[in-house]
Amino acid sequence: MASADSPRVRVFAPATVSNLGPGFDVLGLALHRPGDVVEAELSDRPGGELAGVTGDGGALPLGTGRNAASVAADEVLRRVTGAGRPPGLRLWLHKGMPLASGLGSSGASAAAGAVAANEALGRPLGPEALVECAMAGERASCGAAHADNVAPAIVGGIVLIRSCDPLELVRLPVPDGLFIAVVHPHCEVSTATARARLAGRAFALPDIVANAGNLGALVAALHQGDLALLGRSIDDRIVEPLRAAMIPSSTEVRSAARDAGALGCGISGSGPSMFALCDSDDAAARVALAMRQVFRDRASLGSEAWVGPVNRDGAHVLP
Ligand code: HSE
Image (cartoon, rainbow, N blue to C red):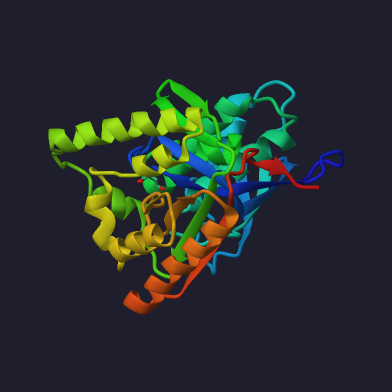
């Protein structure tokens, strides 16, 4: 039962593009849309109870400990429970984005769950603690507590995860004039499966060196506002080559994006969505169209696209 003086809070958390080429598990940025909404209210029943999910076509688990949003909220509760704190939260998750899309779907749910829980409890935790709580949601969802989706979903902008344990986030500058095109082809890649492809692999030193160069250059490009260097740095020699075959026509999509004027193009998170960085809104719209055309013509896949600047704000309370 909700307490009389505890109104329901509603929190939006955005989709994210993680990895950004060479930054596997350590780089991510927030989009303006799509995203998830979590509603939360205090409850006398201990723990985070997920009372309902909409927008998922019935695909997501409601059970305790299995949904990213409720696991994240539960972790918030666990950290703040004590004298005078309410024992529980009741939550509703509204999915506004595709599942298994590479757009940080579980990350958006976990981020919205953590932030909504924190709001309902009177904001006892700061952003870094909330990222840690949301990482628990990621672990429940895909088996790995990576932060490259939940960190930008919560704090916004472009984030580098220097370390997960202890958590250290580095917020990177967002250059003026940077626009993102994201295309989601209508097929699914589970993050757990995409991560399993990498398990136990040995990687060649020249590829590790190339990635180190690209990751360093990418961070420098963001600081210098050098969009051309940023685009050249979106080149991953380690993870994307192992995952490209999971996305129909991904090589052709990348070429089409570059031909249409993208600065750089890669797999968003674990795919199948792909992203392109562009230097104007018009260019991003043109590039998104070219990418969609390849998915349609070469792979017979429908798709949807989102185009816009980086979301600098991250998760926020809705009126
Ligand atoms: N960095 C993660 C991966 C993101 O590529 O597996 C998953 O969304």
